[in-house]
Image 1 (cartoon, chains in turn green, orange):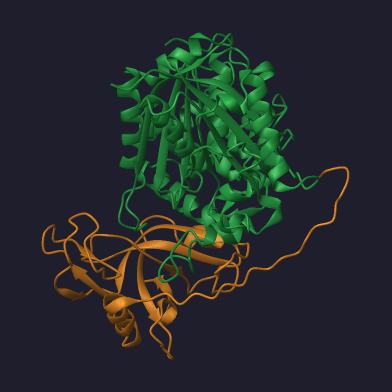
Image 2: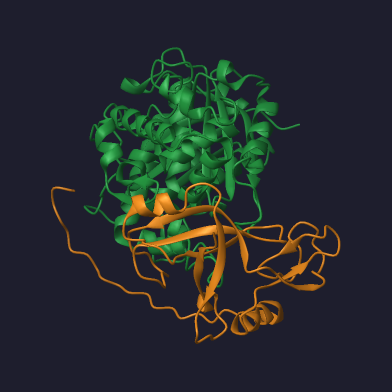
Length: 388
Length: 155
């Protein structure tokens, strides 16, 4: 039986163009913030988990070596994991496993990216193999735009309605990001601006697409025994799920998206959640593109297949709605990729401990955090709760 | 942008790779050179997959019988790119999509063309609804995915 595990500290850097400092210094900023938040020091940590996007993004192949000092990992076991955009969730789940298994009591989990230093678009294009996919995928936006078109077509969703809903998601998140001191893009946009923006990869337009951000995020996981000795409010891990799809993009049905659904099923079963829309108080969906967020509402059972646009337009997922999603502004407004899914975990922890500041969803007790990556290949979920 | 700018160290990494095609992809590419699209059938689940594979991703058994698949099919989804990206081998703007070739059990990724691609509204109009498409080949073929120039509307 797995031990109870909680998040006992989170640290985030400001996201954006952070070219005023070196990459290890940026990692250190996130780590220091997490230690300060938890009231712990490196002497309390049994092991460190670290990850980024594929290392081509950093231009340094062994980032966990490069950052060993910044991570305070010297003399400790150090594990690296990378699953593209899902990296942050894979990191969190790895940290969770380590503590839940009893092999460690306190684990520091860190994700980072400094996207302004390299060519993020080229790095992401190399995620696809070179024979059959790379010439056609247009990096990540192309893949998710194809998903969006398939999803509209399958469910007979009028293009204009999906367009309106995706624009509403963008408007909501850009407004929400104004309340998040760490957010990168701080610009309110209107429905007209989003819908009239230049097409980047149809149907995705400029404000449907996440930015390139620099940033680091650190989260500290601890076992129950350690948690009881600490004074801060813990965010308990209630459920986790992770599911990878098969590699060949054209083989699987990414509308029914069994991998995404299975991820949620695992996490809900572990957390004892039957009706996610009613039981969850807030969700941090991994939303690098507006349309894919709509698909995930359906895959995660927040609404029926094909109805996400209606639910978005009636405000179900907005601040003040039944299940506010991405009150932080989400990936759409800050995307330091290797950190991004871990930011979803950190934000969920802040929400259920009532420490999310201006972006706090009042009375939030149960929060879902999500990571997505690969060629729409990996989904991961961690559900955090105020109660053990 | 940060208030103050510091010196940056420019550094290029140039790493050439040579990816092995192996016998199965090699035969697939030889097929393209001959103007044929080759798939193969899984002896267990009987799906016909294209491009041909070494093993069935689901059954994990070696793929069996080779099949020359239809050069026509149904357009499943598409996207139009207006921005350049790394690895791109075509002019902008271009339209890529997933095509369900007749008689196969998966979708095949390639380009769409043979119509006006400069204007998104024209592309939308052309690709609206259930569109049948067929392969258009290059005259000079060298055993590469772009031996197929693109798929054009067949109806």
